[in-house]
Length: 101
Image (cartoon, rainbow, N blue to C red; front, top):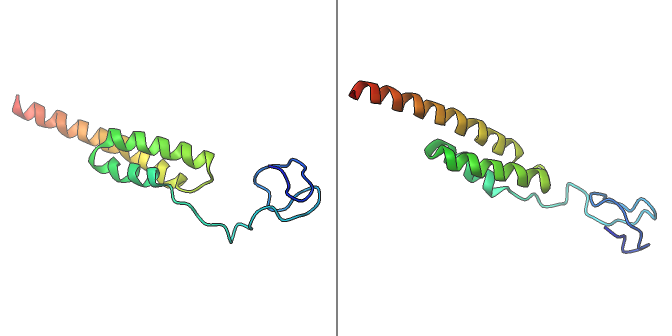
């Protein structure tokens, strides 16, 4: 980013310009918190359709790493949950198959 006051380049996550001290962004308390909708969808889909939940959770985790920390824990939980639910579905499916044979 460039400072609007002095025009020098600086890191994008600064609140104040390191060169001239001008405020270039709002403090964290005043910034709006953006929700990570893909992480939420991934977590919810992990219960019903684990493969889609896994994919959405990975996309949500990548989005959380690139755009702040919003939804990072929820995306991680969605990944873990979709793997566990897939395993449980596989075990119960195998048991049902063995009962039918």
